[in-house]
Length: 226
Image (cartoon, rainbow, N blue to C red; front, side):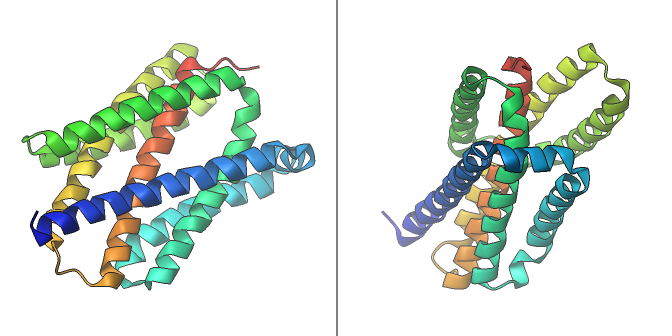
């Protein structure tokens, strides 16, 4: 095995390790908060606090995505960990609305489809980069339609958006995985250790967001609100 191939495998492995670690931390925090009824009650009743957490999440994602190339490795890791923790807190408000069976089913299906699309992305010879603009347009369309449906509360439209969300984030999973693989090929064994950490965190954040959003859309499809 060449040094470049070994480095590629190492970067890909590191991205998946950081993604898995972030997801595990989010799940642990969500479980801990859900097990504390007083904290859940505070989040549900205090809308200012809840929306402050949401805004904090969005700000962290934007900051990490825009500034990661100039951040120190420690700051990049810290920001990623902070985002995983905040996401766990906000998800803890959603989980009590669903049964444990439906959460487990959504998680199982998400893991299977995510793994399948990732495997396809690293094994196919097709260049998925041309999907990029369509996926971005689709993401903006989904966001706008979801915001509109917050006011309309249209049940059939909600189902359509849920399935559209699954299709979109499956596409993004394959697209982002191939981008990360391309980074690995381009960097080879020449990347410095600091850049190696930054690239790993950047890739982990992409796949983490794909997984979480895919899970939430599957949860909407499989879940029944209590």
